[in-house]
Length: 391
Image (cartoon, rainbow, N blue to C red; front, side, top):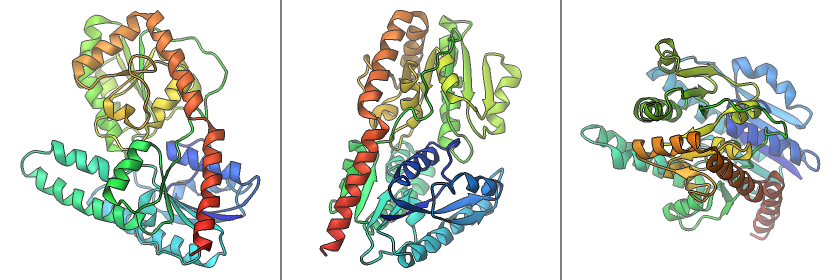
């Protein structure tokens, strides 16, 4: 088959973005038996990285945009216009390349794409973007609620309109599938989970005692910044009352100054930035925390921590798309005092922590293997091609 991938972010093997890592891996696997082409947005500083994709792509169509260190109002407007321009560009490619399947990564990438008659089209949604907008609305108060209400209705309308253009939509979990079908019942939706542990090896590393880790991408991801601030301000002080020597590491790409400044006056927190070896990073931690406050799909960093054998504490939103069992595979807590108590228990009771870690690792291996994901994708291609050809 000749397959066109349309990706909102540059697929990379060493990516700061979990979705970019995922797209790279499935393209690499599919290229062994199919002809893969790629249309992708690419920052100016990322252009040299395109060479890493050429062994797997017959053609690469880059759509360049300016690298931004910070986003002001005009930068945000420019980014939206870039999304629109890229979507139109990708839409023209989809209609002119003789593709057997077109797979679009991230809903926003299809904002201005048109339905192409006779071309099987799949939207890999990654996240259901209406869901976090709805949750922000529910928690909003005062005049800000009017803005959140308007934002919710605009996003909902946009997501429904985009999804209806496609022959099939991939979601990461059954929860997201059901949510999307609640918005638009006539959609064809298939669950294709994110494979876990793509960068986790069999290497062993010595654990650093009483180390609490959060690992995420912060650049352009305010939700991850808010997660760190919530843990540091509301949870970590409670942990340190019980475990005075506890240390919090907020690692990951592009931390803003409001995070890096925390370590200037507090030796108990470290904000190291991008981590080259995340396998080692996960395995050295005593506990991985994911204080997800909004939610929007499967939180890949949780799955990777579980795959690495690190015990996890997260919120109900964090476990929502994963479906692990609280108290067996990980611990779930939503209130700051409950979250802190869960972290303290894992730090103090290492036998219990090891049980949670072992069960979590087994859960991920059974439910989120790369082989199972590739089988689902190839099966979906056959189903969509058959459906389109019969119309």
